Length: 138
Image 1 (cartoon, helix red, strand yellow):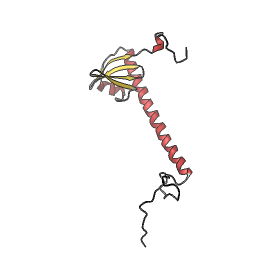
Image 2: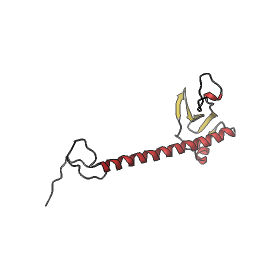
Image 3: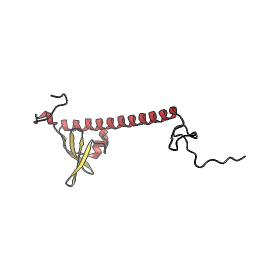
């Protein structure tokens, strides 16, 4: 015997079971499925966040080492060999025809083939700027 499937049936986003009666915008068959779904999404987001922070920290470590040894410009091919991940910066913007990027407190100019002008930007409280507050509130 053939059963006709309801084309308007809505299924649980977590387990795939048909949703019982209730609101038309219902997405889950029960609270357990709803909780499992949201917990999994939160876990995936936290994992991705930790991964990006790890990449940014590694990029910062590489750049800060270059600043310490006095390197102002380096080809991207050499950076890649050091483990640098291009495209992971904390901010970037255009200044004239150049792309200026920051990885936390390190500033550099990003070109197609190299990073140039690599330097460490001083933080406001390091120079006693009027009105500046340090991280410890002093």
